[in-house]
Length: 447
Image (cartoon, rainbow, N blue to C red; front, side):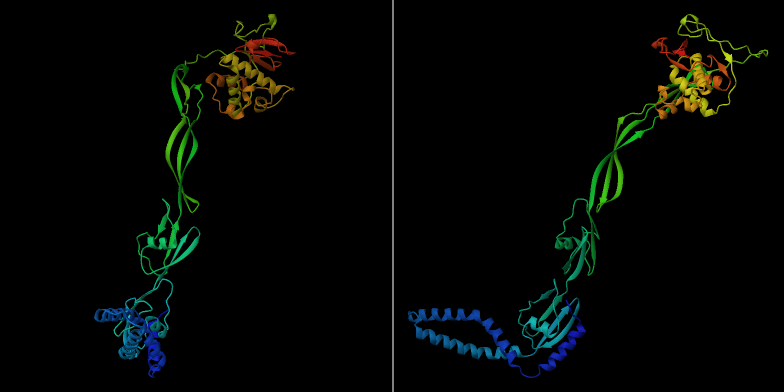
């Protein structure tokens, strides 16, 4: 509502000065207002006259009687209403109240609407006035104005303005036509009373459940083994990760994720621990031996189509000769031990060394001639090295490690440099154009 008390008082004084002269317009308005008030009474008076005439004369009223009665009523009304009409044109003392303030006015306004117009006041949306605008003012009347509060409600990316005299945030949302969901949040609180110019924010909250799979790391378990020397270890079982499924509660505010929390968990596949044997056997004290010159290299016999040192063929232990010592890195020795462990199938020390001899022969051969790593991962050669990551993750046993150190860096040789191939002994001794040399451990070796 557009209103100030100072402007209203000034308007009232100006209006009072201008109304000092008699105004027929005011008189006409007063008479019309009074006649409207008297209209309902005319019907009642006519009914009373007809009833009285019928009761006294027991006759129905004739046209002449009707005309005479109406004329009499008009005369009486004119006589009776003139004082009231002039009374309406007289000045009246009226009190105007608004938001705890009040102003006393002297006015000739007939209705509340005319009073507001004379004072330059106008009502805005939602404003409340008492009594009504059509009320005929009487001396001593109190006119109360209550201005509506404008409140802005933000929801779903748009703003809605509502006008209300008083009430809570909950009522403002109702007037704005906004419904709340189960998880929606409002600021300020729903029961808080609104203030003029206040802004209310509605946050749309969505809650949903999601599932996510995660890996479960395996543990390394060491088991004491009396057949291994102290400091030696041997892999008994390779470990594998498990899988667990998480139930996750996701909270979205106006479409944007603001919270994520785990509310449940289930195991889909348990992890398998890696088992490693740890030696407990005491190492024997080495007995010093007299220094001897290295014996000359002897080539294993291949006569009779059987291995000169193959344990699977029933022959004697292969003869060990001394070759040139190498200077291989720790990583190369480990990769060689991994190859021997995976290809040897638990064949033992001689079986491991024979496989490593083939690896060293290939590195020194003009036909291959790569590094330890190149030859292990050469395409189409060693099947156990096709999956590089799995191969490098393998833990060789202590015998494979010792065999790799002996062949690569100590120069132990079981096979001549011409032996470049091997395969499982169960596949036989015939292998295309290659020449069978012998069987050691679980593998047959070829030139």
